[in-house]
Length: 216
Ligand SMILES: Nc1ncnc2c1ncn2[C@@H]1O[C@H](COP(=O)(O)OP(=O)(O)OP(=O)(O)O)[C@@H](O)[C@H]1O
Ligand SMILES: Cc1cn([C@H]2C[C@H](O)[C@@H](COP(=O)(O)O)O2)c(=O)[nH]c1=O
Image 1 (cartoon, rainbow, N blue to C red):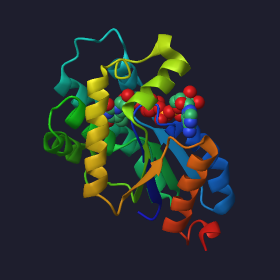
Image 2 (cartoon, protein in one colour; image 1 turned 180 degrees about the vertical axis):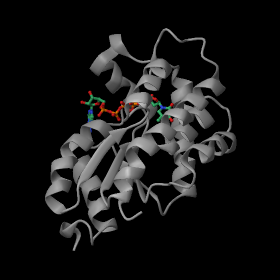
Image 3 (tube, rainbow, N blue to C red; image 1 turned 120 degrees about the horizontal axis):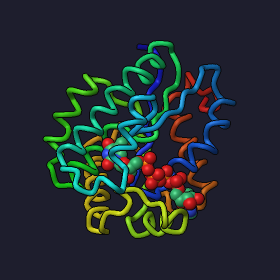
């Protein structure tokens, strides 16, 4: 595999999607490679169907381990349909969330255990790990306030969780950064949107100077 795999991570409302939309044209200016953007859960037809089931507010009875398995199943299909083909074709693959989300949300948030959730995901990803992960850091209070302001009436099942759940997710992300300091780089996502974008851009350009010429 010769492509580059980058994931974006963060608590709900961190601004990953907003930043990605602004970053995409800037990244494309800096490389001759094709840049593919996708998201989890989802990103391919089967995985998008699984996404609807997982996030539906009508599935409040979903068992925590069922939820973890569904995320892992959606990830497997996304990997096979989108991520691996892009990497095999020497493209830059950016995924809005990947396995760290499961470790933070299901391992930490749901308290299933980070080791247990990592194990079921090992089966799904079979060794494919991002070359770089940008972690957009906001406190749970700021993230959830942004979501409420943006779409309070249409919050999904995970977004509707209690603040303690979101605090555990945030804490688990902090541990993941410490344990994977080479791969996961933190951006302060409470800054102005333009600064968040320029920080993320700098990190990518510096990490892959041969692919993104602006990093030279
Ligand atoms: N730097 C920022 N400062 C203030 N508000 C922001 C910032 N970035 C994004 N927002 C706002 O926060 C809300 C959530 O942003 P966005 O959907 O990009 O987050 P996200 O990380 O993709 O969230 P989720 O993972 O929950 O989908 C939007 O209303 C967006 O306009
Ligand atoms: C991949 C993944 C996601 N989640 C959670 C995180 C969010 O609350 C939702 C949907 O994500 P989006 O960024 O709003 O599109 O799902 C999760 O709990 N576990 C995962 O593996």
